[in-house]
Image 1 (cartoon, rainbow, N blue to C red):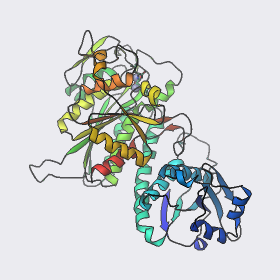
Image 2: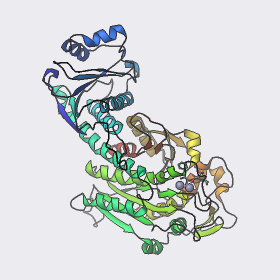
Image 3: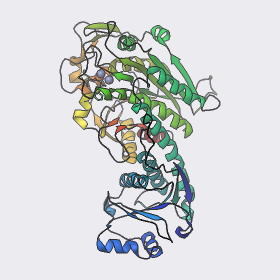
Length: 501
Ligand code: BES
Ligand code: ZN
Ligand code: ZN
């Protein structure tokens, strides 16, 4: 989907459909001139109650000789209007367009109180791209729905520049989220650890001058790195594990001593299929465990987006990628392994594999002396019990970073909720036979036990995002259709944008 920003008059538009976002309790000057243009049709609908501007409601006026189709989309009450209600409306608009024979559409950019037009434009364009998303890769029958190639955004002359930057950023972010969703939706027989590594390779090749640098550690190098926890998880699988390192240098402060500037590391859980291992999961919904690499997808595509946005900072993406399967060689409950850090771990439950692979990746991150590390992981069912499927659990070691992330969450609509590390819970992850156990000896509060466990491998400011609930939609949500959602990507880019200022 391409966006063209224009200050044309509506009379001069050549388009298949014009989308107009209208609030419930106010007719503004934009609406009045539009109403005049279409001979009072809109005010008539308002009078009859056929269209009220209520949120979640649309009305299509089919084209006449003098005008294109009009798609009226309700924004709800002015008092509740926000970028998020606009995203919901934008997503609804594009769903409505998809059911019409429309290739080229236009949309009038509405005014959102207290929001810059740049942000309004970005929110609308992102929502249209993400609302149009469908994963049809493996469908052989031709689609009956129309693809929308171009959307003209109608703005006032003096807004054109700002709106263009908003739309450009939205295009970069929209594409990155779509690619992250695709990785999550591809089945585990395709999206293997090697596939993730290849994806990272392809990304790095797209940029000139080694802006993105890639290094893939294969089994021998992983062994040389003493990543015993990652190796323990991969033992049951015939797919080779990969440790992916994708670096973005956007702030080369290499004048002094040939060193690069400060680094932020992003770590993504890359379990391309989580069967549970010897502690096999129940069959129901096991097929969904192909998305246990959603954290990895978010990290790879975040780095691509950061590079395309030319953010002035340095990022290192670290991805431990493997399957978690049972076999005659698989790690067994009670096995004790030595992690890269040297700490020994009793693997009490082979299904708590995420914290194992992350332990080695978080330890590996130490060598960059990072200013901050953020990990993205579909880590625990427990976070879903606590926060449901729409809120990310955020565990942070520094207040400062958490506050910045909270404001990025408000700006993007990707909700987070602060979760505690708790000292009193630490005894639950001590093992009788090793330094740590990967499943706590107390059943409840596992998202916290997992975070406490990971804390043992960290010596830098750190945010752990448990995206187990948010990375997969089991119901259609506004601009997040069923399946992989690309959770955390827009959130962390917004955070990094603020961070790099
Ligand atoms: N990948 C799962 C967590 C998960 C569950 C993600 C449901 C998305 C949806 C993780 O590896 C896991 O299996 N965790 C166990 C840990 C337990 C054995 C201590 C869990 O949450 O049940
Ligand atoms: Zn598991
Ligand atoms: Zn898992």
